[in-house]
Amino acid sequence: MNTSKIEEGRELVRQAEKCLKTSLLKWRPEYDLAADYYTKAATAFRIGKSYDQSRDCLLKAVDCYKHNTAWFHAARCYEQIVLICKETNNLLQVEEYANKAANLYQQHGSPESAAAALDKAAKVVEQKHPDMALRFYQHALEVSMIEDSSRSAIEYCSKVSRILVKLRMYDQAADALRREIGLNQQCESYGQIGRLAVVLVMVQLARGDQVAAEKAFKEWGNCCDAQEVQTLEMLLQAYDDEDPDTALRALSSPFIKHMDVEYALLAREVPLPQGMPASKADVIKNATASYTSPNADVSQSEDGAGDAADEEEEEGGLC
View (cartoon, one colour):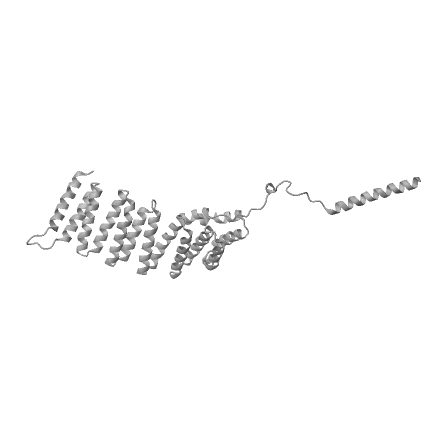
């Protein structure tokens, strides 16, 4: 702990409090100056590793900025608190402050900054709390849609799709992928649509819906390149034939292995068709009587009758 920085922070806090005091000659607090002192104090406390005091100063700065309707600067303070939560590993508090920052950015009329703040917060929590990151990306997507920014919307929609697949929420992932395909159609990104079609087919198979998988291929397969078409045809035919070996070969295609990590892992999660050709080991011994041709009985009976006739002829001849 850096004691000199902490003392510096305390002095800045005293200056901020002084700015907020009123007197006979100063009727209104100087919120702008106080906010400036509080943010500087927060920085000093943070360097001195007194994180609680740093957060408290930032919250006081937010109040000062709000009095002056300085929404943008208030939002920046909330973003600084998110970073403190990261450093102190209080990730569950990130959601509250990140959403407040986004709301203030929107109030200021900066939707791009709002979406960026949510994106940064998602990256902070994604590894340990992917469900929270999912909510951040979904919020960022909605902000981008309101702003009518197709490029940003595609980026956030892609992140939503990947996390849903990672969390094995396949029903919602299918919806997100269709939405992502629609956004790429607006930008005429047909190559990306082809790759997403492959993912959508795998997601539908992971859901256990082979009909929906075939429908996805018929609908978007024309955007796939030759290798993707060949792989999907092999995969869907393997499910029709209940051939797990061929399905596994299709899911192990090199281009699938080099897709985004979540989709490459999805290929391992897709349940293979259950049909297996019967092997000799599967046959149950003595389950039914052995098959005997009826002609064998006839030939045997004819041979027996012939022998009897010969015996009779021999007996008659002796007589």
